[in-house]
Length: 224
Ligand code: CA
Image (tube, rainbow, N blue to C red; front, side, top):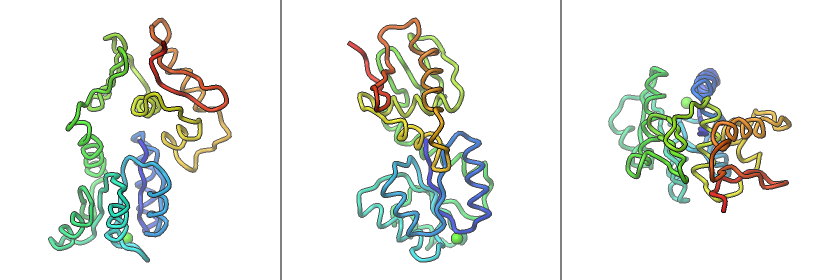
């Protein structure tokens, strides 16, 4: 899961980024509305944490612009003021939820989890490919009914693959989705994690699910 934090208070942005990364979310930050908007338009995020009071474009304008351009990434808005009008304006602008500053980090994470889950709950929280099952609520993964314990980055790589079945994902796409822009792209960390996942999920099972597309990246599909 990849999150964009748009917040001009450097210290808070730093705390949010570190904290979210510790919770397993790849996190990018932008410190004004224009940067936030262009990142949100050009990269794939699972959620945007958006401060209302920003230099230049406000959070409300960023949210409105994204929605007008049919970018429906969930938005959690941060507002410094506990005024009903601001909260209403935030929700009207297209935000999905809001949090009033100052807030406890635990609450931010709980709201993020709830927003990320919302889509899955409406549909089915269990993602399935062949006999592979990923429960996005309990974060349990099973192959042929057998529980497969995964580390948080392994889970993140697998979730990205499972949510994009039959699509070739490049190493860069996977790295950017699971880690973030600061991530040193020179490393072969994606290959390493794919190897771990194969060992845990594909070894000894049929059909194989994780396929190498030579020269491009990886694809999750049921092999025939
Ligand atoms: Ca601010």
